[in-house]
Length: 111
Image 1 (cartoon, rainbow, N blue to C red):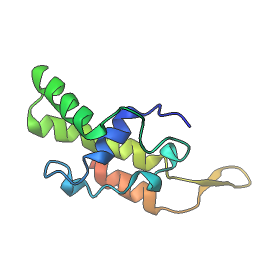
Image 2 (image 1 turned 45 degrees about the vertical axis):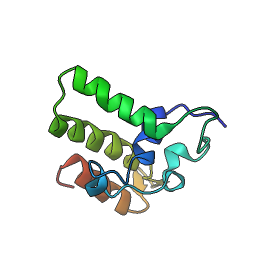
Image 3 (image 1 turned 60 degrees about the vertical axis):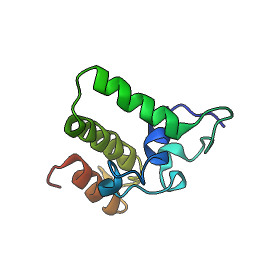
Image 4 (image 1 turned 45 degrees about the horizontal axis):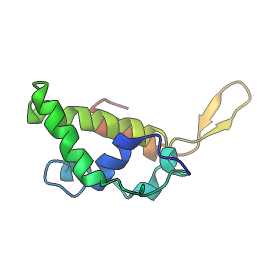
């Protein structure tokens, strides 16, 4: 019932913004890292907090392009959390490659 990953919640709340639209982020309930988190926190406006984060990054000298890169990394980490594994005889086996492939797209790396 806690919210330990505020930046994830802020990013997902702002997912429809023109800045993030190309990331094609899902609703919060789609991500395993947030499965036991509160979707909203009392007195917290995640959309406003996201704009405050953007303002802070801008004050630190991050360009809009660099901010998008940061948000791609955060989204990639969030998506990697959806990877599930089965125990193989001598190794772990990825149950479904889709989250890994999607994270690779977000992180702009080859699978």
